[in-house]
Image 1 (cartoon, rainbow, N blue to C red):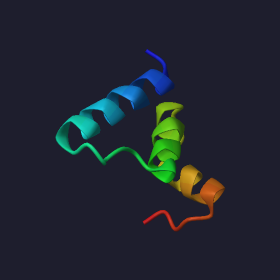
Image 2 (cartoon, rainbow, N blue to C red):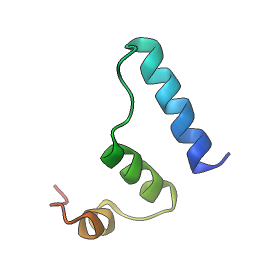
Image 3 (cartoon, rainbow, N blue to C red):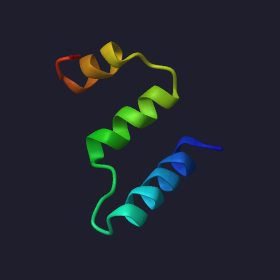
Image 4 (spheres, rainbow, N blue to C red):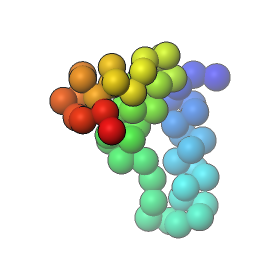
Length: 52
């Protein structure tokens, strides 16, 4: 399974619970980065966010 396929599954599950709900762009980005093995600190640094 690819990261994009996993995101599609998560979006389908979220939409089955609430038709208007899906991952935001930032949530998708964090998901993809995590999928690739990056730490949350690395992701936060790349996105210019505080890690906590």
